[in-house]
Length: 183
Image (cartoon, rainbow, N blue to C red; front, top):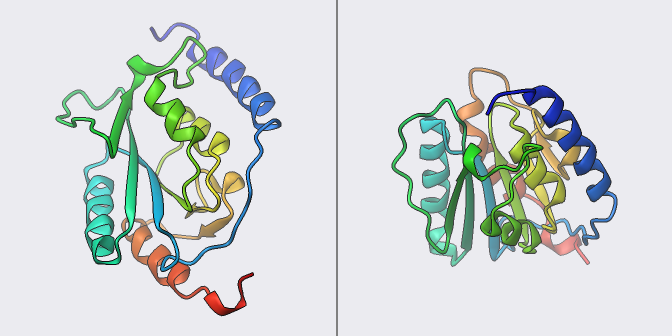
């Protein structure tokens, strides 16, 4: 249903801004070493990003970190073989309401959870991902400065050539946060 999509998205953005005013979250700067629960929001339609997410999770398994993943599959991805489970959830355009925001229970549960760290991995702006990032109650939000920089606590500026290595950059900079100076 592509009818009036831009208008419906604008109304959805207005609803998002109203709901975001009532979100209460505790911001707590945390290093990657201290984060025990990490939530990752990502563009599941981009194979490079999916590989990057899997690589990041694999690199953190030895630290006993719990991961919760939420992937958005854009409508231009016609074929996907992703299966949701307790740790991984995927949603598509079919899971969006009339005003283009996610309405599934699993996405709502993800938004309401309070992980230590929320990592956002996407090259492109998608309103449903913006909805999740802005309303998330994560204690610390990190990702690339574009496209969701205004809603993040920690941003990495990446150029076009090396944006696939966002998780490496986040691991480096979040890993070097001094734990001794944190209260």
